[in-house]
Image (cartoon, rainbow, N blue to C red):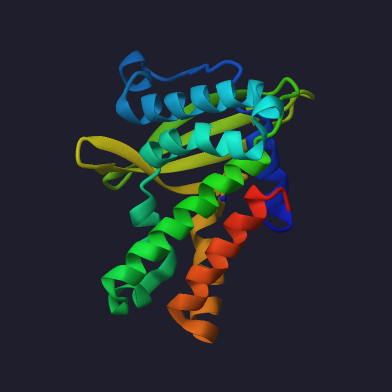
Length: 209
């Protein structure tokens, strides 16, 4: 899911996720709860892909990660929230095209960034309530011991808990950043311009650009 300050955090996430998961201070029932299990499953897949990153290449990493990311993230909700009020004015085919393009771009971002491992570890530090949602707070422990916070806002969708936002450095909302970007494109070119922009971003990432 990145310019300036965010690129470092995303690079750390994609290069360093999950050698071991520890849950200090969290009750056992909470530790094995659905939100933690979802993030645990995501990171297990990321670790597996990371270990094969060079042999898979960016296209192979995309194919490996797409099913798990699509299951863990509520991409339809994230797309709607990122587009904002304009979403209600769109035609069904435009909504579908935006969701597909956003999904492809997001997964391609993971595939592009998640390209190696240098000894970092990942741990869940806390799970807190945020109204009906859950915030799963995690840290990426770099090889030099420095922790980088990354928090997942999760919402129940049917029987599943799914990610609806990611907070890089613990505070930078990825969805808020995307909304600012999307709003600018929508104002200047409308929904078709946004669809084209997202598709172009996905193409660039998957081509190695």
